[in-house]
Image (cartoon, rainbow, N blue to C red; front, side):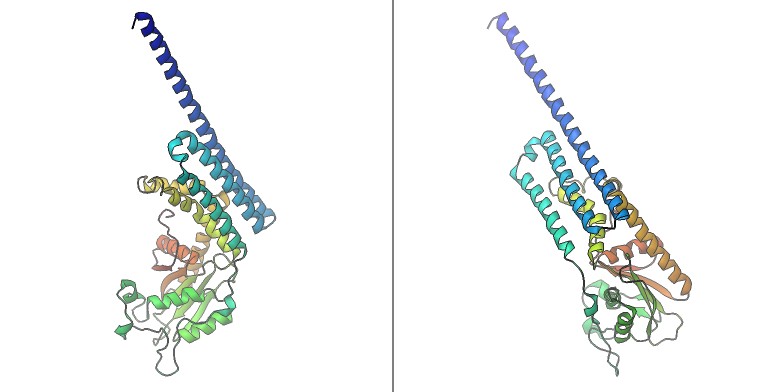
Length: 343
């Protein structure tokens, strides 16, 4: 080597370093633009869904726009990932994951348009005979053969004189799907001794709350009032599920690729979930909880001498648990989505 060669090598090395730096800056800039575009598409989608729902009340159009907006947002996010983490994003597993995710969105949306529960075919899940007041799936706690190892099956709620068990709450969560007052009253009569309806919303109300007062063999004093919130039973409620829980569902899927939820503080994840949720769904969720809270307050006022318990199934179970936590009222949810990041 001579001094001239060393100078040429130094110049060449500096040129390579400068080019690599420019390439890195270019990738970072494109990643930022794609990410901002993804967020913008998500926000615009939420605004369009809100305007169409308010003006035209067309759920199918809202669903189509939400799917298209979600797809565009996912594609833009993928483009951002390709530029910031090319080794991971270029892998077949990552691409397959995103394709399957988008396919599931459209498949679930199609199922949503076909979904409607036939509430006219409901029948009591437990009944009492006319003689000894014990029947199918009826357990007052005296028959220990019916007690399972699960602690919840041995627990009781309500007043001391009229205690209710997990099966009583499950029955009420199920009877919240009754399509009218007569069907609800009939199932109450077949399942409980000395029970009466004290509140019921219209079937298509979101959220729908039904309530019954259980007095058993006691007098009308010191009874237990069970308020049940209906879960998902029609297209509108399925869309409510999607709007409320889709954001955290996406984060949970991404957590399989990178440990996001296990490392980021809960408060930050909750803020992210709230920020990326569509604006109209954020407002709708707050309205649902406020509506349940107001109904429960009225029940407490009208039945101040009795003990109140909340329950519900599916989406209704989630609402019941949230309302119970905020109002310090016992609540039991069945097959309810988690609310860890919603409190």
